[in-house]
Amino acid sequence: MTNEHKTFSELLRASFKSDDTEEWLDVHFTRPIGLAFALFWNRFGVHPNVITIISFFLGAAAGVMFYFPDLYHNIAGVILLMFANFCDSTDGQMARLTGKKTLVGRVLDGLSGDVWFLFIYVAIFLRTGNMFYDEIGYSAYFIAFAIAAWAGFGCHSRQSSLADYYRQIHLFFLLGKEGSELDNSAEQRKIAESMPKERWFARLFYSNYAGYCKSQEERTPKFQAFYEQLRQRYSNPATIPQSLRDEFRRGSLPLMKYTNLLTFNSRAIIVYLSCLLGVPYVYPILEITVYTVMYAHMRRSHERLSEQMTKRLASFQ
Image (cartoon, rainbow, N blue to C red; front, side, top):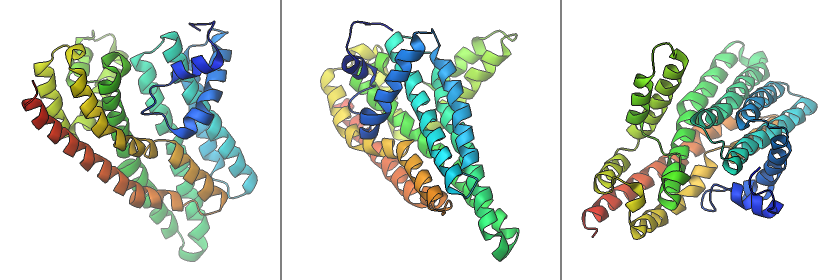
């Protein structure tokens, strides 16, 4: 670990992305435990990506535990998902402190949450079907599947990806390109096309990542217009005036609470409570209703900010 003479508190602070984007629960609970894990695993030379892969299995096992209606399995699910999240925090903190940040690691990090919740949604769908089978027969499974699929694919994946995108945009204006992972679909597509055919897996990886970036860009047309004008005026991101950065950051900062709510912690807490209380179907219903409203507000507000910043850029000296 670099800066080995620093105290735990100093290392913890260095492992944060930024004060603007860190959640209270992460700062005071997840990140300290993640850092302790990071310091431990780094002694053995374990790469952050290995920790991410471990989290895949922990999160998947948690999903399986939530299928069962009894308290003991559900408590096991809570513990496994918490450890999966600790590992998810560990890999990012290790990467930032050791400089072992890679695009593969970033994609794996995002994929880990998808794997966890895929198993969780399947567990909730089957468990809910079991609960109502005696009353309405196999229709219970069809209805439960439709709700879980709508919540997972129609809501969760879109909400999380855009929340992550807005967070990276905020970090770009706060810390610059080196402190952000704000990527461009066209650039990622070029990388994929430049790969030799025998490197088919790398081509597939970059093509899929380009598609992920493209989906984010298609849902943010006004930000794309602003960002394109910004790049035309300041080809080197380091030359963007600090006052312009600060102005965008001030407008973006109130939205960070929504990017946090739409990612892991709040979702996990609702999963824990709904499964422990024996009402697992509450989680996907909240996903479809309350979370969709938050998502729509966040997106509308960010697009409004981007439109204002485009006008501001036109008059900026």
